[in-house]
Image 1: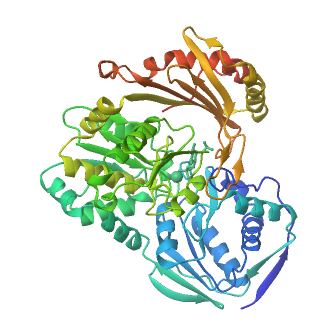
Image 2: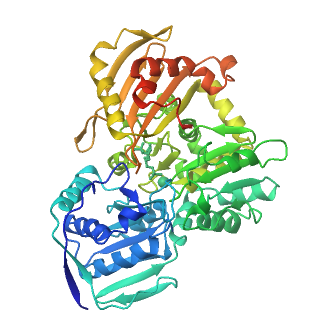
Image 3: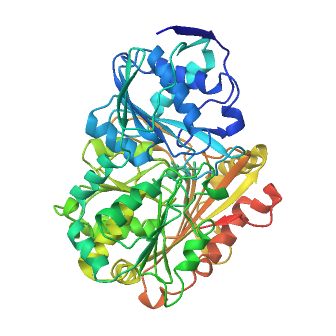
Length: 545
Ligand code: VG1
Ligand code: CO
């Protein structure tokens, strides 16, 4: 094998964000751009030579070409073996499962998750460590530091292209490439957690489900498990073929982008259960007939009912949620007498808690739910969990949620996204808000609301003591209301301001207020405190979840 030593120069902006490096496809297709990042990654990994890596992606445009490049670079950098998903496909949770099951050194996932794909869309690359989870900040910062000084990369020069569409081992120079079934390890893991017999019986009894894979990588997994192993009727999984451009859609399972599913779940003829997953299948959306479950409630309901599911029958060690996620999970943890951890946004902050056995379930308000079975959020896992709960209790999705509210109270919750703000305007808004923080406690905005506490969230990891600051501005109101402001770390164009709104309502007779009405006073307070319209020049949020 001939190893080429290619001279290169650093690119600006190769710092991984909330979940890997995400850029427009055109940025990734610049000569040396992907290579620089991959070499920086390899340089930042101690003792990589001879090790095994897992490699796959969500099948979006540029997936195959990036896999080709990464394989040649891995061979040139002395990697021992790469496990590649057939056709270059692996969902994010499946990569996590494969790393853990096979004891791999780490894994590379090619995805920009819920961002649109295609030649004009987004591409992304993220690295997961040996526990199967996203690289922690110290690793991503080491990679970024290398991208600032990189001067050369190594790539195999004279090797024929490796074929990745049939299962089995082959060689690329001195390196072994094993093409693996993308679904098998993952499906086996799910079988060990859930009551497949009860779920099969649920379908056999005539219950119907619609699972929208949004033309992304979740399709093959959902088809194999729901239609294959659980006997759901053919057609239960819609948009089940992964497409390079996700059919032109935004593979983001929320009420704004999954309108087809929302529509199909309305009315008396609708299926009993609706669900969707995102580009890389780590997110999930849960619906009943005429009923949408907010992700924060989903985490709380799963936690409260976990012992009904075989994999969690012995109970939970703890729950972890990202800071902007509603405190519905805290109420459950309180009732169960277990800890509830509050972490910064992004799954990488859950890894230590899961590894240390301090948390069993984790979740984020951004349609992310997961557990200690892997170290990523897991869309189909959450969908199967809800299916198992319906099968075990005979209750519908709506009944499960309403009973939960009656027992624990309802945490009304919504996120307002202001997208495409010029970066400097968004930063000015946040800087002004941070400047106001010391004077906000005790003040009232929009009528009756008085701010009890105002701060910028900082997190000290209870396992390794690492500190992350500046993770979002929090306004905590008397009576339990809360507003959180933060800027997105996953976008590729301008800045996105996320405003998270939450209000607690203990009284069951007031659990039927439309969410935006229930939160109207907080929405007004957010505007009054932050001056979002004046700063952005926009009239309203583009996405409301
Ligand atoms: C968003 C979500 C965050 C999630 C991240 C990755 O990040 O808010 O909760 O972990 O996406 O999800 P941000 O920085 O844009 O708010 V995924 O499905 O893109 O891997
Ligand atoms: Co995702």
